Amino acid sequence: MFRTASFYFLGLLVLLVAGFWQTYFSLPPGDVLLSLHWHGIPMVLWALFLIVQPWLIRSGRVKWHRALGKASYALFPILVLAVTYVVIQDLGRNHPDPMSPGALGAYFIGYAHTGIMVLFYGLAIYHRKNVQLHARYMVSTALPMITPGLFRIVLNWIPADADVLEYFFLTMVSVGIVPIALIVADKIRGRIYPPFVYLAIAWAINLAGFKLAHNFDLWRSFTTWSLTLGI
Image (cartoon, rainbow, N blue to C red):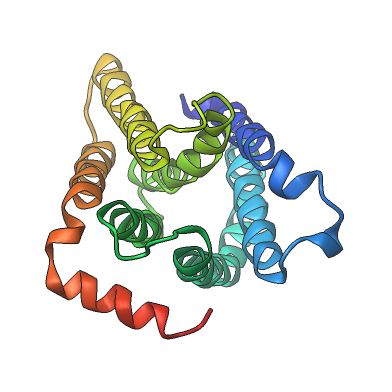
């Protein structure tokens, strides 16, 4: 898989461009909120990072791979901050009732997806001397990027009166097939490594959180506070 990883990540980039074509990539830069540029540019750069890094290893350019890896120490925090800002902004701008169960669940997912990226990027850096673990943890940072791109495509096909957030949940369920497929691929190769198992568990927590977040007063209080930020 890792010999062809760049092609999978290229597919991810194509998915993101296709999903956000109408609302971002096809629009003049001046017609897009500055915050979306702050979010979109680091996200595209991260997808390009994931495409290039396996290719550098495969082509024997290890020094370039390490140098680019160190550059990610700057890029990744910017990405996390940008995503967090847009998650908060989306709560007030795109949900008529931010305190509804669906909106509370979607808000939870924004942080949960970001948390997955942070956790698995951190583990990738921690295990950077173990190629098998490092590569799998880094691959795992891509999973939360699939949901938004795929969901924007799904939006073009659902009925106008459909429950949009329910389709969002179903999109996440379908994305959950990916870590399972990666575990099966490892099994076929003869050994199941922990990263994709952890990823499957983390994704299951995401799905549960979407459905259950509205039941927790602490989360409701945090969401209420987030709305006061005026982002």
